[in-house]
Length: 300
Image (cartoon, rainbow, N blue to C red; front, side, top):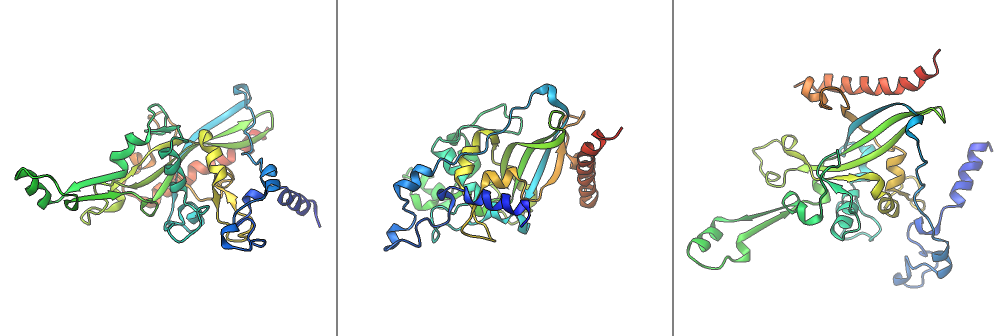
């Protein structure tokens, strides 16, 4: 057994009982006892997100901010999308969108903004027009014109759900830390993207043309929430991982669609239009420049 296996076994043995799937399921005498932890287990449950280390500005020799798209149609990104139907599943299994919107609604997640520059803050009531469409049918308008009270049956309401999320967009910074002598990544923000709720059921419009960013979340302020939410581990359901671990470890596939530049951080499709292949090649070129930066720092 090599040292890597020793470290892995040690790390797994230190995991708290709270992240075990279906706690107490092997000791439960009734279904109601599943998930109920003992007082001893609760006392050991002091699990918190691994704190970011302090990085002094003088230690950052080089940095680049990039924006990426996480396409939820890709299999490797499925843990961020599923489950979308939560009726017949346990309460600890939720998609990333459900985790975010629930905590925004109850006021726990406060660092919600309009765009990726985090300049204008939002609360859940401000997002109503983005997340819900309320439409009155022709029969309803006839009631209104006749001076009658509008019946609820003539009002159609459409709410965005986790199934409507097409992708996520993230903003992060790659930087070279001279104190540790390595290239690192720090995730700064994440945004769910879905078709515009006003055109989501419009078959005449291409869904790709109606995609909008619902809101941006300042990621460091959401780490505790995302750490408490678990992601299904397909290789071992007894050891789920957290959304915070998944995102910080970059266990997803993202495609760069923007970088900070002199042109006002313009997107790739602003200067390479109507050519998906060349846009992908440009994204890979930016990724190669970032990846080669660490090697260049050690070249004399």
